[in-house]
Amino acid sequence: MTDRVPPDGVRIIACIGAGVIGGGWVAYFLANGFRVRAWDPAPDAESRLRALVEAAWPALTELGLAPGASPDDLTVTADLADAVSGADYVQESAPEQLDLKRRLLADIDAVTPEHVVIGSSTSGYGMTEMAVDAVSGHRLVVAHPFNPPYLIPLVEVVGGKRTAADVVTWTAAFLRHVGKSVIVMDQEVPGFIANRLQEALWREALHMVANGEATPAQIDASITDGPGLRWAFHGPMLTFHLAGGPGGMAHMLDHFGPSLLSPWTRLDAPELTPELRDAVVAGTEEEAAGRTIADLVRERDRRLVDMLRVLGKVPGGI
Image 1 (cartoon, rainbow, N blue to C red):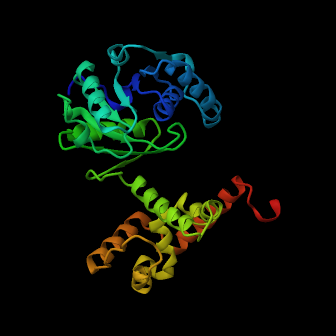
Image 2: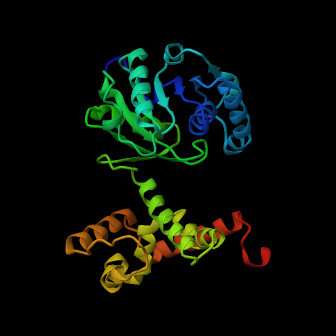
Image 3: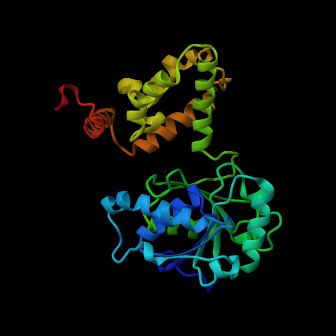
């Protein structure tokens, strides 16, 4: 659309829904120097929202505020149309109820100028199923953040069947411009990427607790003091790439592939076909981006030391 401002030209953002996620978005956008107009139907929405922004502001200040950034740039309005009036971008963050999402997105669409992109913070629904009642479904897109949105950088962006490609591109560019780490998904997947992975871990944890195999504290410690430290910078795929030694992921899959059939988890393992093996190897090599195993080991060890220091877990308290 010719009237759409460029990603770096956004000045006013409307945040529809001001709970934990919506309020987190408000705090993040304010810290980045935007003027924010918020709407939420709850009678105490404004007091809760301003309290959330106040609580988040010290951390945001420590990370660094944009010049002139201020909580005073927040306007809370009782009228939805007033909230989106003059906005360059709209972020919806209503509760995860499909009927509610459908109605609200249709209402937002009806009062928002045609050129303005409307993003949704949904954590599980696809835009295809949410945008069924919206007339201008082409400008509706999922922009799924992680709690708290003012600190966690990841946002997963994906359109629905009616979403225009340029809307996805614009949304990703805008969110990257404001400092977010953006994954543009190739297709809609229920739960997106990160939530699918979190759900698998959560499901297995519940199995272990239910069977008396581990306590919640043991489960948390197994991640925070174990693989979670590595996942903070390499993620599970590069972690297994290093587990293969000099042979990398190829050796890892060829050597340990049969163990995928071991009954360790309650999840069905996929068949390790040659196609799956080759896709995982190729994808890992692409992510490594020319870094050798030795390079990645040095990077991992350096960042682990940094992480341990930050967490106060350096042996001897050094």
